[in-house]
Length: 416
Ligand code: PMP
Image 1 (cartoon, rainbow, N blue to C red):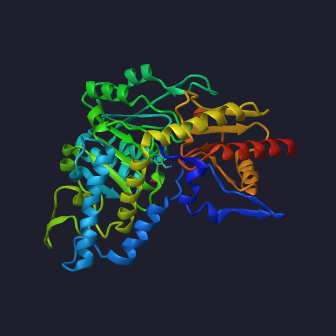
Image 2 (cartoon, helix red, strand yellow; image 1 turned 90 degrees about the vertical axis):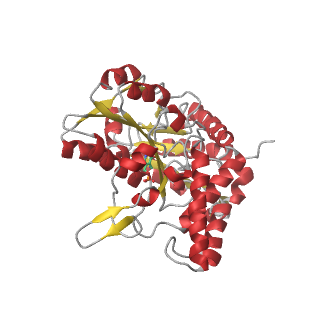
Image 3 (spheres, rainbow, N blue to C red; image 1 turned 135 degrees about the vertical axis):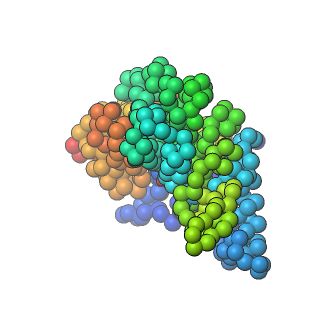
């Protein structure tokens, strides 16, 4: 029998109990509707991290003593947990710990530029990408004199917005060396047709990079089996800690890409004249890594696996679909959503209240939603707006969050 989600598990996320507001003797529960920016932490993650700090903390791969050995074992064993979580086609020695999706994508863009791009090579990305999957490519395109081509979106602004596959087909040409795209978008939550895009990229021999920052809790697809060459994600978006990222790469990339940062732990030899690098994930993990965060990541994956990714996704998507259908009934609300029923994000704006003001009004009701450009300025401009407010759902979200949010938006509408 599937685990109950929503308000049934909110007591497993201590932050909620600690953020109730009491006003005029009335309790206002905390409605956290911004999990797309970062998810709240499950108690097992908090406990795993504090247990590690209290009993086992030591630097990894540095000491012969007990705590260092135990920390190193945990650190390495977690690569297997992460690999299994991503899919059958990836091995622990292909998993690199980074500081976040952003750093993972920078390592990839710089390394791919170094090894695979020549002058006039083409890089293809969708117009809807997060800045973390846009600026690194823009920078390497400038440096290497490459062409950066953007796949446009099609459909109606209000709904049915999707990546334009026929344009993608035209843009992914013979001189395309890399195609990089989000699995799930962070602005409107669209699930991109990665299978089709991977097939197009492979037909011209291009590498495929997937930004999985928004998809790791919801999509159970063996992306390496589909042909992806590298994926990046952030544990803080899957109920785990911040300060750590994951980069999984094909065997070819992990061997061929140069290191991104230099220092301790990533060398095979250093002399005063020059240095050489170790092979495998360590080549990309210079310096003291996030150690306790790895313990937290392992616990987050264990919890998600117990509950079931698909179960979490279906729960969040059903809530998003309900919110979407109700919020668009409110006068002056314009939604920006694909509306397929599979998204866990609903972005919208109020024609008379700026997104930032609306977010502030919602905060007064103890409701957290993010307003702004969502680190995707080109896409926000493409949509013809200057800011959107985004409501995103997760395992602990429930119908009460929807009702509170709708009531607060209606109340705000009355003020204007
Ligand atoms: N890509 C997408 C699609 C995202 O949603 C985010 C986080 N907002 C990032 C990349 C960057 O992730 P991080 O800030 O954890 O590096």
